[in-house]
Amino acid sequence: MISPAYKDQIRAWQGHKLEGKAFQVLSGKIKLVLIPIFDFSSEKVGTPFEFFLDDSHPAIISIPGGYLNGFQFLSSDSRLMVFSTMSVEESKSDDYRFDADKFYDW
Image 1 (tube, rainbow, N blue to C red):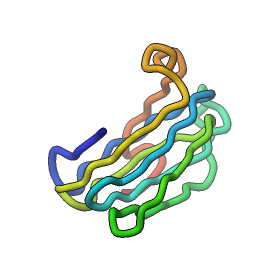
Image 2: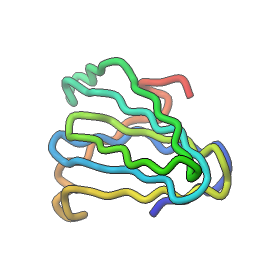
Image 3: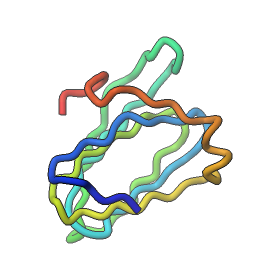
Image 4: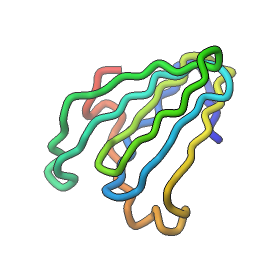
C-alpha cells in the first residue's frame, strides 16, 4: 500500500518488461498514467493513457508488462493498493525507473 507524503506528490516512472501490476484506490483520488515502452534501452515510448481513480467509483486497473506507470496523489488522504504478478525478489531484475518529468507533463 502506498500513501502520499503530501497532496499532489508524483511517483513516476517505473516499468517492467515482464511483471504485471494492478492498482486499486482504497481512499482518496489519484491520477494514474500508463505509457507503453517499446524499447527500454533507447527509451522509445508510445502515447500516454490517463486514468482518474477515486474511492467513490471502485475499480482495479491492470497493467501488463511493457508499460511504464506513474501516478499523482490528488488528495492527501489517498491510499493506493498495488498488486503484482511477481515477488519482490523476482521484480528486482525486471525493474526500470526514469525521472518523473521525462515522458509526461504532470
